[in-house]
Image (cartoon, rainbow over all chains, first blue to last red; front, side, top):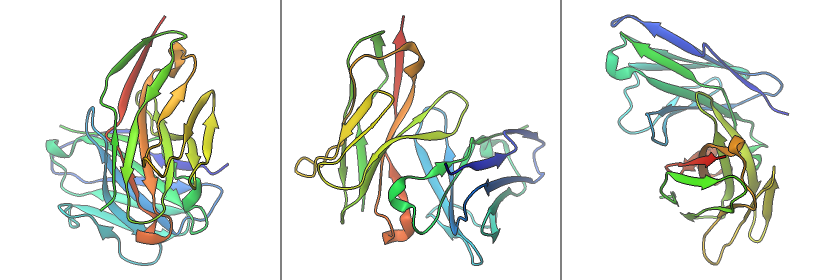
Length: 117
Length: 114
């Protein structure tokens, strides 16, 4: 079955530094990947849609200069949290689908727990 | 826009009890419907799905039927186990419309006690 690998699973960084999170589709090509943020005891909030070879589409209220998304290949999307602050601490999850797979559900990465100190 | 409303939690049951988690949706088209499960500290896993009206998705003893007339996709299991303790999310996707974005409910936390 489809597998999405997300790395790292946990990261602690100092305030003001940047952190990069990788999302890879291991056995299929993902033209579209999605990045979500999940607050404690809350649902997933879609941050942006990452499209291979083009700019990401950000949801309203998400700062594109703070959350940089790059989808350079059909198997890799990265989310970089720039100049991180404690309020950016959260659980970030990516998901992937290919154009033919939308009706088969999304494959999610295992998530990244970011803690900014 | 699309929305998903699911039963508020938390839900606490004894082992072998019957489980129902309600989910209703609003959508402009003909969405596919999903249930995802999230175990503590992990990402989401697809539990089951249904792509058209009257379809029944099933997996690991869980079932949900796509009811277009009531716009519902309630999750059921006849006999829950302690290992079923997790957060359950109902979701819809309109496929190629809207770039395939999914809309999620708020999640329902299930705790099963021995």
